[in-house]
Each structure stands twice: as C-alpha cells, then as structure tokens.
Image: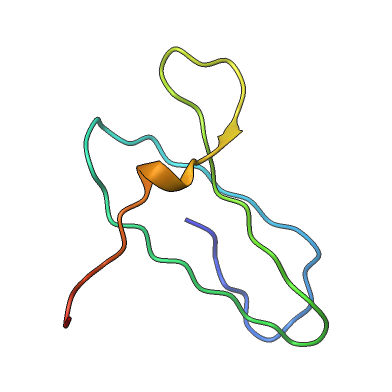
Length: 66
C-alpha cells in the first residue's frame, strides 16, 4: 500500500485501501536510516467522517508458530 523506495530519507508517507467487513491481515515494516521513527495506523468506518487511530482492541496478534 505504501511503496518502499529503498534507503532514502522520507519524513512522511501515506496510503489507503478499501476493505470489506471482517478480519484482514496487516503487515507492517519500517526502514530506519537514521534517527527515531513512529507509525500511526488509522481507519475510517463506513459511518465515520474522520480518520481515527485503530484501537488496540481491533487488532489481533498473529499467533503463527506459537
């Protein structure tokens, strides 16, 4: 959803995708060339008007291999 351009510095990037109702796998990665980093995951529900941070209770850890 967000292209990794390789080892360059980017201060910000974003992407979006339309999902159907139900669970979906999410894979997150980051490349840190120098300095700190952070990530925010937002969603907008069908009845919502603004993006909101995805609440922790909506995320299910991948238990594969455990």
